[in-house]
Image (tube, rainbow, N blue to C red):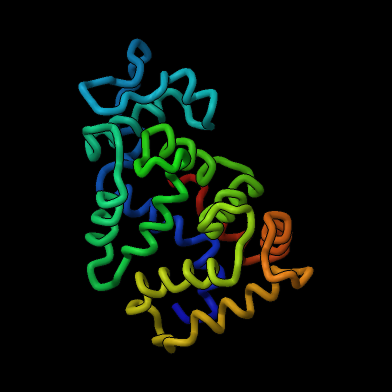
Length: 231
């Protein structure tokens, strides 16, 4: 993947890597692999955190009862405590990208899923975020992507934040790019893309500017469709 593909990669396809990791470690199983048990709710064992009721999660997401049951079984198999901490998240990504450094990207993605900012991802956090990425509207998906780039959660994306995300992607995938990119390539790419997004030239990108720019970009809109039918 060359430099011209990184804009699309940074906004959209990076999330597909997350889906691939989940599938690799059995958290996302094909829905047909589980029998539907209409008499059972989410199976609750002795765990540190027990998720909200199935009916409540079904109301909060766009998953069916059967899909939620399947997702929970996979989540519980990998995370018996009912919680995922950041080190576990980084460990999963390190195994999936052994020839790159996925630590920083995993940190940013973890923070995007850690809704309560308490240092752990609950099943509810996981499945609500997943629902947005897989079943949400384009605007909902772009809001989620904005949250990923808004590292300090102040409601704005700065050039420094965009560069930090982009560098984390290069660190994770750089050895797999072809032709190999120069060290200064991430900064040059961010300068160009940030200027495109910062429409009023005030040095920050708002959610409105982010969504408007992405919606006018055919490549980014096409990438949103890649989330569909993953499970």
